[in-house]
Each structure stands twice: as structure tokens, then as C-alpha cells.
Length: 504
Image (cartoon, rainbow, N blue to C red; front, side, top):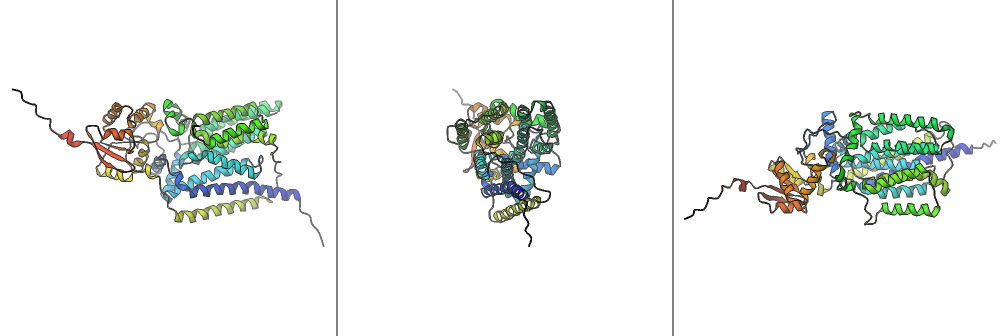
């Protein structure tokens, strides 16, 4: 009889290697299935409609747009799509699976983001605490989880910034494998400029904590990576113009405070963001936690972004934990020992099999669910019956709200305005807001005349809708719970002038 003893170090490393991959994958799968089952909440923003239409145009023409071709107010004006790849992916998925396609694509992006987030936290928190943290991050961000390009870019953002922070934690240069991640991000969404902007501050953290003798070498490595990152961002069909196009949205001035996702955070009502922020402050005071100066700068910068614009709350929710992960884990005593690498081939096969099993489970669940659940876009953003009436009347120049503009584009009707604020410019959109809110009736009438509007398509509760009911020369011809149509009163225009009265 012979007795053999297994190598505990190798076995332990194999188990930990499997757990390091399997737990994030399972958590991501759960997140994916949850949002797949709640698919309609991802289809509630009219921007999805014009994003898909532009993607269809790109596929049809085999080229990216350089001018606008979808509106009659800005036709031929210069415009570049900073989200061309996302638009193509959404268009292809929609053509293949109907509305289930964009839902699956967006849910996959959410699941991938959760998986990457959990993987990056593997050395800092135990799985239970990490799951609680990612749950809170998802709840903070859920209001902005929509079938739009920023969601497809989200996992690449977390992977890129997480990779930079991991390098800073190791006091080393970032991996060059992050450059393809950044390049894909740049093709998916214009938010890649955040990645460029944070290379410097995160690199400063690496320099701040490294040995003095290593600072010159490390500074050169981070500087070289920064230059290469700028070049990676230009690996798009637009080349160097990608940087200009992505930054154009920031030049909209006052208009940013009028678009809901660019408005400042509102603490008038309770929110998960408020809860998280107060909890983070309370934890810091209770534990006496401290951060390095560069991490404080990063934390304050991300907080300022979230407070300034609501759309940045999800960045705060997923990136701030990565910024404070290592110092908090060290001071709270939750830092886990570095994983001992297993021998070649001993842990790779189980990990690959586990990943394959998770993928098969996700695919099978998706097939079963979409076979019995038809997805539908939010009806309040899709005035189907009203647009049918407009097409029967052969209306050519329709003054509509921005949300309805997305639906008009999806019906191959040139719109007055849609969600591309950077195309129209600050003053045009401000005048549009004044017109639809009837803040200035003269602006409304001047707009209708300037653009030779022959029909309007407005929501029933808008002030402009009620004003048009009482404006001479316009008449209401259709109304339902979604939209109201007014057209020019042709009878009034054709009526002969009254004869002058005779005098004795």
C-alpha cells in the first residue's frame, strides 16, 4: 500500500483561481438575467430609436456619417457619430431579434461590468462584501441603465480605469493591453475622454507611493503610455477628429443644465446615491480612514462630476470603490493574500470549463425567456397612430418634441429635432425649449414660420399644445393619450378677404 500526499499549495491555488473567476462570472450572470427579465426598463429612452436608425444608415451605406441626413433643420450640417460602433451593434441586434436584441445587448454589458468589477475586487474584499458593494453600485446607477451606447462602453470603462488603478496599486506602469480596451471604448462612446483625463491623476498616485529611486523610470513609462493612449483613441474611422467630436457636447453651456441627465444631482428626494455618499462619509469618520493626496484628488474629482451631472453617478458608483479599494482594505483588515499561481495547466482547464458552463447557462436562459416574452418600446415615446395620420396627410415639415424626433427618424421621416444636442447647438435648443413650453409665444410662432412647419406633433400636456388650440391659423386634427397633431388652417388661408363696408 502506498500513500500519496497532494500538494496543498497547488490545490489551494487551483481552488482560489477557480473561485476568482467563477464568483464574478456567476454574479455577472445573475445581473444579466435580472435586467433581461426587466427588459422594458431598458427601452424607455427615445434616444435608443435614433441611435438604431443611425446604425442602420451606417450598415446600409458602409460608411460613418460626416453630415446630418436625418433632419430638415440641420440637413447637410457637419456631424460625426462618436458612438458609431454601438449604433451598428444595436442596429444589427434589432434587425436580428427585434427589441429583444438591444435588451440582450444592454443586459450583457451590465453583466460584463459586474463581472469585471467583482474580479477587480477579488484581492480586496471577500465575495459576500464584494457582492453587497456591487449591488449598491448597480442600484445607484440603474436610472441610467438604458439601451444606449454608453452602456456598451461601460464594461470597457471599468476595465480600463480598473487596470490603471491596479497598476497604481502595484506601483508599476499600466499594461499595454489596456490600449486595445481604450480603442474599443473610443469607438463605442465619446466618454473615452474620461479615460484619457484620468491617466495623469492615477499615474501620479503610482509615483507618489513608489520608491524614490524608481520615480523617473515610472514617470517615463506612464508618460509613454499616455501618448500611446491618445493615439489609441484615434483608432476610429474619424481619426484625430474623434477627440474634437467627443468633446463637443461639453460646449453646450447653459443647455447642459436643462437636459435631465446633465442636471446636477438632486437631494430633494431620497436616492441610493445620497445614501452611499453619506455612508462613505460616515465610514471614513468612524474608522479614521486616510488616503494619499492623489487618491483624495481623484475621489473629490469623481464626486464633483457626480454632483454636477446626474449621468456621472454611475461612474462614481463603479470607479470610486476601485479608487479606495486597496487603502480601505489595508486599514479595515480585509486585504486578502495575493493568489499563489498554480502550475501550468493545473487550474486553467477548470476555469475554462466553469466559464463555458456559465456561458451555456446564460444562453439557454436567454433562449427560453425571449421565446415567451415579447419586448416592446415605451409607448409614450412612440406615437404610432399619430405618425400614421401625418403620413396620410403627407406632412413634410413636422415640428415635434425631441423624444418624438427619435421615433420620426425610425420611420424615415426627417425630424425637426432629436436627442443630438451637439448637432443643433446651444441657441437652437434653447429656442426649442422656449417654444414647446410656450415661455415665449412669439418664439413659438417665429419658429413655426421660419422652418415652414405644416404640422406639429406634441405631447398632450405641453403648454405649446394648449396654445396652438387658440392660435389663429392652426387647428387640431388628431389627439390621443400620446400625441396631439395641429396643422395649418388651410380654409382660413384660402378665405377671401371681407368686402369693405360702404359709407353714405
